[in-house]
Length: 389
Ligand SMILES: [Zn+2]
Image (tube, rainbow, N blue to C red; front, side, top):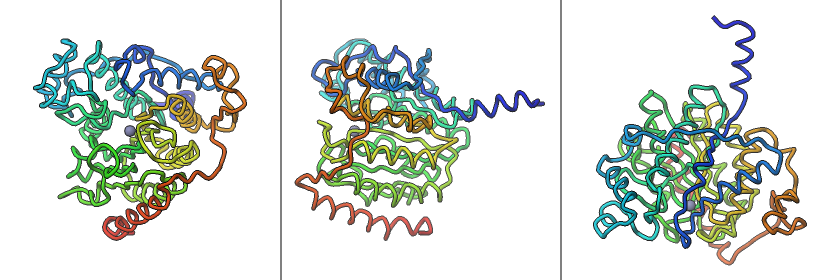
């Protein structure tokens, strides 16, 4: 029986969002010429703390082989472990498993890192489903390209697919929203025929960017028809386009699907200055989405990181995301804190946390207008009616 004191403590626990972070995740390095810099997690933590927000660390258990095997093929896991130990691959590994290609190199500690990333996301899931946290942010997660039997796009283990499988095995319905500039292919395809998983991805068009999927026409198959949603955007798509697309599909479909849990991949490589993609977003578009996701997902929200190759953009966007979850947006400074700027050689007069409003029309902007309207028209004609819209 729960007494008044315990009930109050329970309510308090349920009202507090949490993060999952461990310094052990900062110890790995894809190599000096690889665009994915693990340092961005450290930079994010530094900026969050410089803004006066809490960012506790904890010990995290690496995912077990059994936990990984709910999504990944055993043969692939064995190959990944062996590949990591040997520190080198051969042509067979590259051909069969995507290991050892430029995107997915071997490096010391790869296998422990992959298990730790999955362990962190599983920990985030437990905090939401067992400890009553209304939202949990795990920026090390979001490896959305890894497939059950293949590494792809800097991703070796798909932590998102793993936690979706765990939630399904407990009888839950799951919605997945992917904000990364690249299509969330490693989550879409394994659940493409599943009507208990709704995947929504807004990304740069596969006609112009990796991977080779994510067209609006990909809407699911069999029982899963209508449960995969894609909005491909043309290069130079700006904040207004992005927000229009987000609003057209994410709130209505999340409400209609009524999932038990909502997983969001908060990749921020759609920022205009990201070196790996060509969208034209500022922190304002992401802030809008973070606020709306909070409205829609509160109480059942597992938020992971994702892509982002301009390190300062990553730190700024994920600081905003965490502040939104904490309800501390109003306490944030408009400029990056002076101590943080000094430490990273930034001009404190010109280093914004939230980008100032302004028009940024890149040279493909007119085509971007046509393309997003075309994608939305397709979805309004072929997909939304399945949901009663
Ligand atoms: Zn990406």
